[in-house]
Image 1 (cartoon, rainbow, N blue to C red):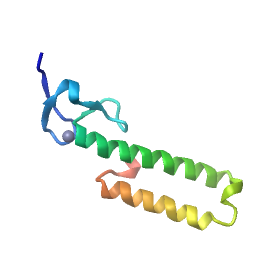
Image 2 (image 1 turned 120 degrees about the vertical axis):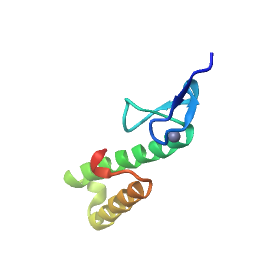
Image 3 (image 1 turned 90 degrees about the horizontal axis):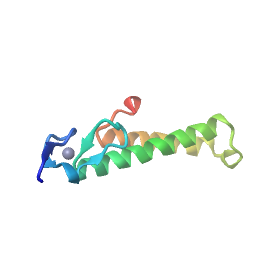
Image 4 (image 1 turned 30 degrees about the horizontal axis):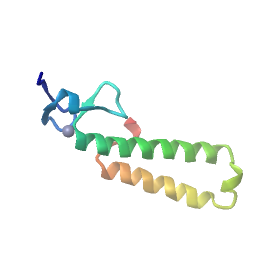
Amino acid sequence: MEMPVPCDKCGEWVELNSTRQSETDRNKLYCESCYEVDNEVDTLHQEILDLEYDLDNDAEHMKGQRREYKKEIKEKRARIAELGYDYEDL
Ligand SMILES: [Zn+2]
C-alpha cells in the first residue's frame, strides 16, 4: 500500500517506506537526500565530541599537536554550518 508522507526537513512528499529516521533527531523522518546530509552532520558531531573528549583528557597521542586538533574541530564545525545545521542545536 502506498503511503506518501512529507519529509520532515525539505517537505517533499516521499513514500513512507523510503524515508529514514534522522540521526540527529530520532523523532524525524527524512527523505533519502536529507538523510545523507543528516548522517554526515551526525558523523561530524560524533568526531568533534571524541576530539574534545581527548583534548579535555590530555590524550597521549595529542601531545604537542593540540593546536592541530583544535583546528580540526573548527573545520568540522564549519562543515556542519555549511550543511545548514547549527552545532549548538545538536
Ligand atoms: Zn527531504
